Length: 176
Image (tube, rainbow, N blue to C red; front, side, top):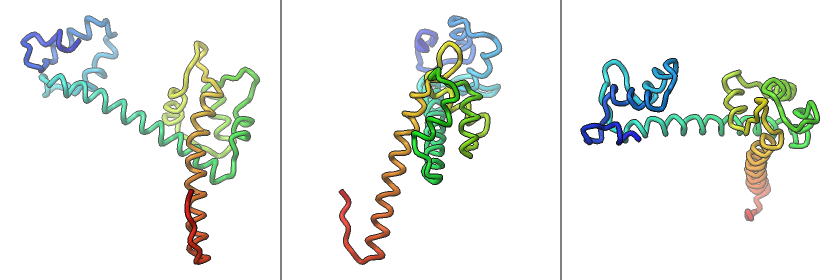
């Protein structure tokens, strides 16, 4: 679509051409400046390579994905350190029998386990899950995300313990 708005076919797009694209997709005016900034345009930079624009959008998504993954690992790590099993997490979060969680229920459940996240971080975690029409996430979806990461942390800790044991007992221990 960017190529369509590159009128001189030089693989660069001017800010006004990009604004035409935003008009075409009927982006609301209040979102326009944010999208222009994400693309890399500003008051000084009025011409950008199409590849750079695409890269800017992908970099943002990659950073967001990395942050969400880090937060999910943080939750799993706190659970590991506090010896909280997945089943206990399930009981902390299952405040009702609907199988879904609201943002506040997720926050309350994590806080009750001393897993404290900022509102921004909690929102990132919440939005990383499948959200239904009632703005709630599936409990099973969230549990699966944590279960995978907790399993990784538990296995790393187990390997670490085996290595430490073999070092203190002068035994050679092979990892399988």
